[in-house]
Length: 141
Image (cartoon, rainbow, N blue to C red; front, top):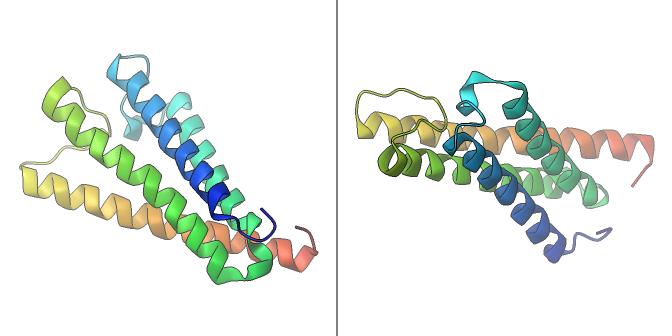
């Protein structure tokens, strides 16, 4: 994706969503603890998502930092939104904590999850832009 092919971005987004669903499934059946316990398994999935967001930024590094930041933001937005939806579904239908956040009521939980999505989106933008900046400075694709 030297020119920023949208199909490649869609594939990366599907990969991040699939990784997140796999992590949630492992949490749902009890193999992994909730995400915020930061076990090695949870960290592995988080690092994979971050790596895909950085890669998404590197793919469009020559188009500029804005394009790289957009890709990183979009990719981590997809992953964190999937995780937050799974958190709501897990607590509602499975009675299991997925993310590991405690909130006194539904409004507070939705507020916490919204903050999580915004933070992850910004993190994806910043990391992808930094990766693109370094890539451009080093003169590599």
